[in-house]
Image 1 (cartoon, rainbow, N blue to C red):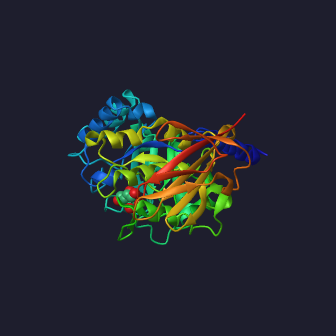
Image 2 (image 1 turned 90 degrees about the horizontal axis):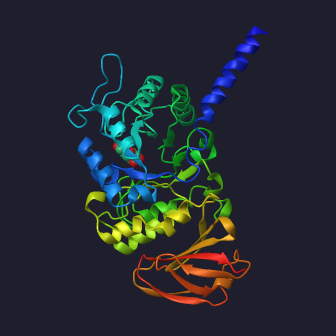
Image 3 (image 1 turned 180 degrees about the horizontal axis):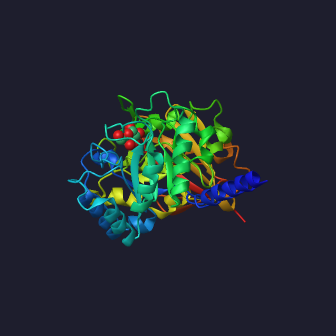
Length: 397
Ligand code: GLA
C-alpha cells in the first residue's frame, strides 16, 4: 500500500514537472543563434551587442526572442567538481550574468551542449553529467537548450535525449529542449514527448544547392525533407509537427554571403511554409535594409507562426518550378511558387490546377503587400531565378 502511494506521488511529481514544459513552443521558436556566422568566435560582447541591435532594429519585437549561444562557449575542462564552466576569457562575467542581461532586455537565453562526451568542436559534452548540468543551466536562467549529437558512441538516441529531458524536468525551470540529432534516428517518430523541436537533417550552409562535408545549401536541405518519409503531401514529415513540437530543418542563412537576396527571400518564405523554427544566423549588427526587411516581414512571419500549427508541403515539383502549400487558420492557405530554374522566368499560376483549393479565394501577394483579385483568374508573374512568389489566399465570403 505504502509502496503504491509512494509510486503515485512520484508519478504526480513527474507530471507536475512535465507540465511546466508544455506550451513552451505552441508556435515554432524564433530567435538568433551564433553558429552560422560566428562559429567559435563568440564572446559576451557579441551576444550583448546582438541583443541591443535586435531591440533597436525591431527583431525582438518581431518575435526573435531566443538568443542562443552555440558551441565554443565552454572552458576546455569541467571544474574539479565536474561542473560545466564557461570560457573565462570569452565570458568573463559568467553565464548567469549574461542570462540576466538578456532577460532584462526582454530576451530568452539559449545555450548549446551535446548529448555525447564532447561537443562537435571538442568541448565537454553532457554525457553522464545530465542532472548536474540541468541544475546549472536552470541556475543560470537558461530558457532554451540545443543538444547536439557528436561523440555519442553507441548510445541510444531516444534514451539519451530522454535522460536530458528528465534532468531538465527535475531541475524545474521551463526550458525549450531542441534536439540536434540530425534526423539520424527518425526523431519525428519519438521526440514529440522528449523535446519541442528536432533537427531532421544535417547542417545547413549559406548556399542554394552547394554542398561541403556534411553541410548543404538550403534547397538541398529542403529537398531532403522529402527523402525522410516515403509519403509527400500532408501525410509526409509534416504530420509529426504541430503546436508544441516541430520539425527543424536547421537555422536560417538569410543574409549570409553565398545567397543572393532572392535566395534569402525564398529560403525565408519556404521555411515559413514548412513551419520551421526561425532562428536567424546572420550578423544582425551589419545587415542591409533588404535583409532586415526579409527577416522582419510581419505578414510572412505570420505564416510561420500560424496558430493552427500545420506544416506545409511540396504540392508539385516540375522542371524550373515548385509549388508549396500550407493550410492556415481561418480557412486561409499560403501558396509559394519557387523559380527553381537558373534564369528569370514567367511563371503562370493556374489556381484551378491546385486541387486542394476547393473554392474561390481572394489572393494577396504577401511580399509586395498587394491584393491581386481572386483565384478565378490564373496569373503570370516574372520571377527571378531562385526567387518566389508568396501568396496568401482567404476564402471569398
Ligand atoms: C553541429 C550542429 C550545428 C552546430 C555545430 C556546433 O554540427 O548541427 O548546428 O551546433 O554542431 O559544433
